[in-house]
Picture 1 (spheres, rainbow, N blue to C red):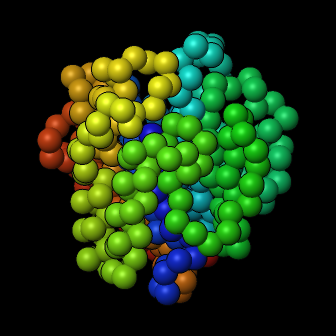
Picture 2 (cartoon, rainbow, N blue to C red):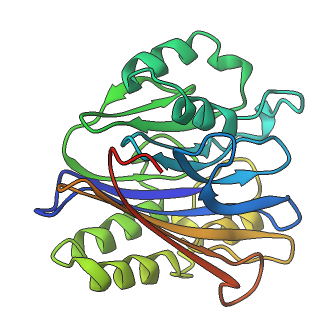
Length: 257
């Protein structure tokens, strides 16, 4: 997952409005979002290589998502899967703050990551290149650096998300997916320098990424309403211009599937 844009307690109807793009190599095996057979209360996509996930929600109102922290010079090829940090939270019972405190003790065993974890009452963030923080109401952007690092795509996405907060229902969904499809490339002088070289910085700079082998694999919208209705919509791309699969789920928090 390379970009998460979210509004927390900023809308009269929704506790959480989240829009996210997962960027990955096209040949990495992946299962589309669905309820997991081994944990039927978890709704998420699944990385079939390591069995973790990048974003998910439970029928009980728990939510988590992760992005990688881009630092190629510090890459550890045998580090454990970061996606399991999401799946362990979703399948467990720990409160979000306690969970982040627990994993922080061994966090440097992992390659760099940013993790969001929440439940009905709280939303927390943690990076093993930063700190644990409880999030207050606001509009946030998270890419492959710390929360709200002002990369062009983060700033552009937060602005578009802010402009969509007067909408709801299908109009909000359409605006969020249009935001996630944005392929604007900022000028070279605004690009970050993360150690991958200028050409790759340009490839990775849009909200929606497209290259021959790597790009936006899926776009996901998660809406958690104040009446506890949860809606998740995922579009899967796998290198194609149009999504080859769109999945929609809606349920009431607390109802066991």
